[in-house]
Image 1 (cartoon, rainbow, N blue to C red):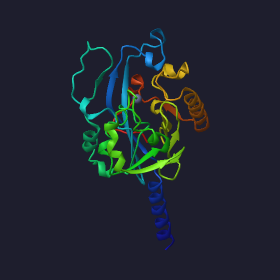
Image 2 (cartoon, rainbow, N blue to C red):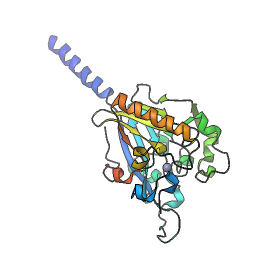
Image 3 (tube, rainbow, N blue to C red):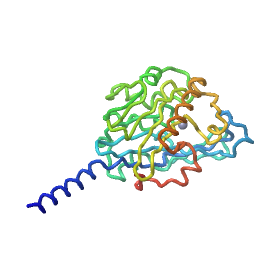
Image 4 (cartoon, helix red, strand yellow):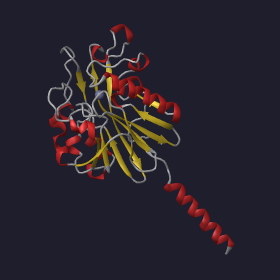
Length: 272
Ligand SMILES: [Zn+2]
């Protein structure tokens, strides 16, 4: 009898261990953008030799659901051949994020939550395909989402959100209720910009920057891009993330950092 109880207790423990397994983080290649210079990020040519930005999408699997974080470039970019001689930025996007998810047997309907660091075109490309999900959106971002006149906002890319199940939030937000995946309110780049903290058990905590920073130089030189919504707010958000990194021991992943992205494993491989 005692052995049976011990076995039962052991199985229960194993089950509980499984139930509390931490989140898994997948990184997807959702394009690259090649630039002539970093002027718009307020970085002089001699201050950084970076001329290419990675454009990430991320998926976080948790016992209580799945979060898609950022939606990459617009679908129209997929398969187009960048004209290397054209002035201005050129973009490349090999495989549509929705197709990359399908490769992992995931349909949009399988995604519990969609959230965007912000609604610029290189982050909201798949937004219209993710409207059956609960969309976690900062109230401040939504309030200004359809304002005219920003060169990096294309409201057509997320018009479908008007009829989506929007969960409007204000400030930091604990996505799955156990503190392991948290939206961190970092306004400034846009009115309701947010970053994401993921507590990975083996990798350690990671903060996904969104566009709080575009390049490493922006961080080391504490330089605010010229096209940010509010420079002062941006600096406050930078301080907030510095404090979060210090408090949690988290590693900062700058989303557009191509040099970092080249070292990261891509889905279907994952970090846990
Ligand atoms: Zn961006």
